Length: 431
Image (cartoon, rainbow, N blue to C red):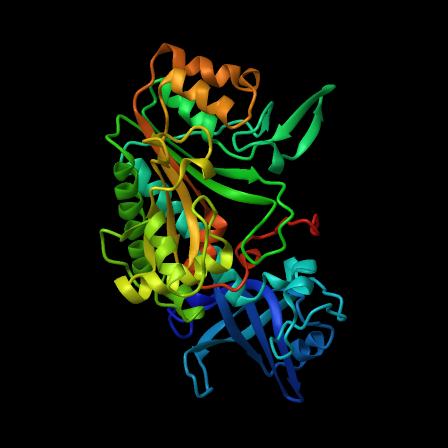
């Protein structure tokens, strides 16, 4: 007999025989009758028996033990209705230690740090399962949209000889007696692939930033969605694609992942397109009216960014918008200048947080070398990258988006660590 999931029990014919396997999340032995709640990745179902031998064997069962059962589908006598399983055969596949380190019933709150220490147990919770099903779906829909639009998926090196964003956030390591670093961005490689003629490329993969940040939105290792496209007119082509991709992904979630969204009590509102474009200068003016005064050239910090999101939502009735026309001084060397002061860079903001940073890239060799030197970087460190621009590369642009932060904000999670299976931050290197 083929094993089925708990959710399929509700669709099964009453009286049919089924086989299930999962974890014993609740156990009640009431003399002549016994109840067990079996949980698997699709939900849970009640098992019932009045068989004396089965009840005797259930006395050895501990919470969270792995069990395999066979039984008949019958209508439940509970008020909630639905189907349950009348046990015919029962087996403990793996007995759990009865001294569970965290409360699995949800009745006693467990702080996030302890939950992460016992992440395998924590992930058995139905809500946690829903988060990672939705995360999987988000990655799938992003890939689906890009494949439908003729993009090529790439995998770039994670061991590199220099950084794309400067040396302050690089993790260094020994590489056969030479100094190497963990990649902090796919940026340089995706530009090189456009010079190779691949035209439209993307990657969803790990990225590492040695930021000593202790916030609810930063990680030392995160999943980076990086995208680059050639033959663009300007950065507006990239922003238009982000709009289309965001609407495509959220529409798919609302259509195909209703069960998981209901578990998390979520309803994702689709923002209207086009998303508002708020210039950096106008953003500073909006904040100044609220008593938050930033000098031109200063980055908009976390709390100020939250406030700006509230102001934009109040004015434009949307959580999704772009900040444009950043001063070049606060952007990386590969961003194209817009005049002497500004850049063709933008940030994509949603729910009060930056999800993506992007823009048009500088593709002129002489200007690029000048910008690298202007940022205090050494040309020798970028020799292979610069050689790319000597032999013809089209006008291009792209963005980098944090999948973890996207999941956090779409699902309205309090902490980015809840959106990651096994998060890494300045304090956490296990499990």
